[in-house]
Image 1: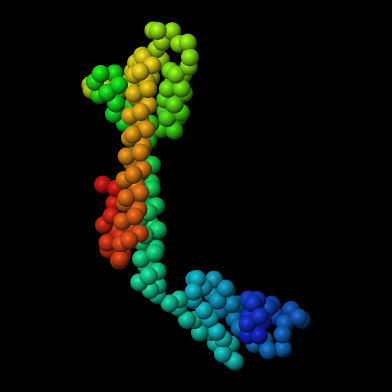
Image 2: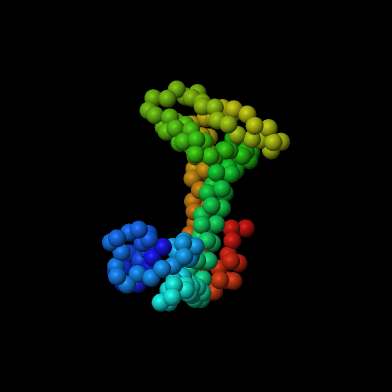
Length: 192
């Protein structure tokens, strides 16, 4: 294997196979092991070869406090976003039926609830219009329970409030993360 300092400085890898006749004149012989190691160095690390083909590796500089803070913030924001999404889809409580019931809130559940609320505001609905919706009572029993127009609308309003509450908490925590001044402070901010 050959290495050319001038080819590397021009933006290439600087490596050439022994039989490559287009290799620059300043090429030196290097081992294929060193060439492979040089090509696969971690980001930020660098290498050089002396005139005899001996390789020297300079490790990537350790990230500074600002970089570590930015990385910690990025990780913590992702954790908070994930926790927020989980809290939203975990379901919500509504007393639309007169007593507290738990309603599901996964994506499909939210779409079904939106469709039911929309159907409840159509003009010329019969006075006894009802729609079934899946919910859990205080005893932990899940069932399709009929809802009047006003009941399904209240369940929809309660769902929206639960989502907004979680989104507001997410925004507040993210603002705290982005204004934290050190990694330890960032890591202390969590959904719990």
